[in-house]
Amino acid sequence: MKKLWFILPACLFFILFVLFTFVVKKELLSNFDFDTTVRLQNHIPLQYDSFLSFFSLVGSFEILAGLLFFIALFRRKILSFLIFIPLVGAHIVELIGKSLMNHPGPPFLFFRYNLDFLFPSSYVQPGSSYPSGHSLRIIFVSVIFFYLIMKSKINNYSKVFFNVFLIMFNVTMLTSRISLGEHWTTDVVGGILLGLSSGIFALIFL
Image (cartoon, rainbow, N blue to C red; front, side, top):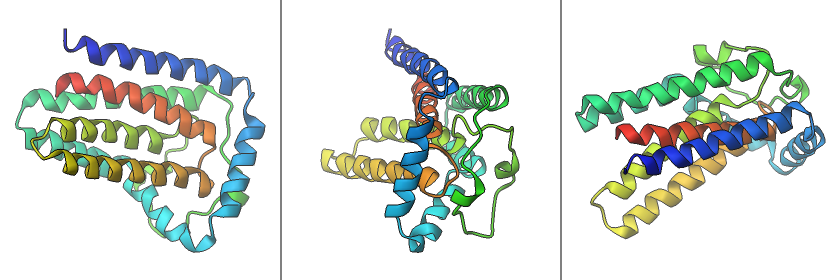
């Protein structure tokens, strides 16, 4: 019965993802995407690009998959390793979306990533930019962290502190996707919905 409380919201967010995908496919938010990117880049000085580019590395598959592995290892339960099943499933949905949708990312003139290093996963370019894999992964991991924080035995003040930090980290990460010209806003929203769906479903195994 407890698992039902995870399955229902997971299904709800997946349905929202599918509906939002149809909206994106119809190109109903193209002007919104362009305007949001322009406004963000106009308001975020170039001097912050290196800091925000660092979040591109943190959100890479290699980093976050390794983090999830250590979380599962720390819990010392074989079942915990099954959290990778919904993560892999979400990435399959991501790759299908990027392969089938005609939704190219921002043109190169918007690109502001300025670090000299990229993980191998960053070179995988199926053709479309929807949904954002970085957004998907960071939300997935954040759902896991939020659950573990709320289940921990630390005091409530510490829980509030860690959750506020988690929110601020997510806001910065998701904003960087747009301000660096790596994704449109709709890509990020799609990644958030898919990350929430798969992340909440993964809680079944914790």
